[in-house]
Length: 130
Image 1 (tube, rainbow, N blue to C red):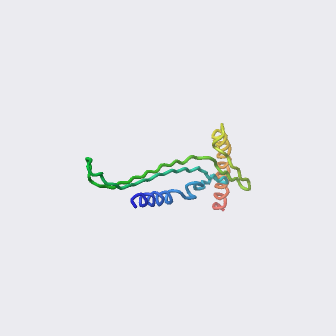
Image 2: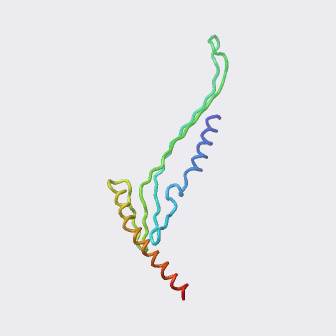
């Protein structure tokens, strides 16, 4: 019974921790570009319990019970989904050099987004001035 309770508690906690929001992260928008992180989640757990009593004629004639459990897990980023207007790209982070290519891609995109934001602000400012 002890082991059963431990397993139920561990499973309940794992259910609380694992959700789609943990695997597919919150979308971040930078002007016309939206970036969605994708992660890999792994968990493992174990539990056990038992009860017993000492044998007659030996030291330790008492009885007892005990149990224990443990869990571990990890989260690793595996890709970014990049949405630019009508174009959707999946940029994997596991292959060699892909992080550099993502940074390079964002480095090319962010100045364009900033230029567009300045342009929109100017147009709005001109409309207010009239």
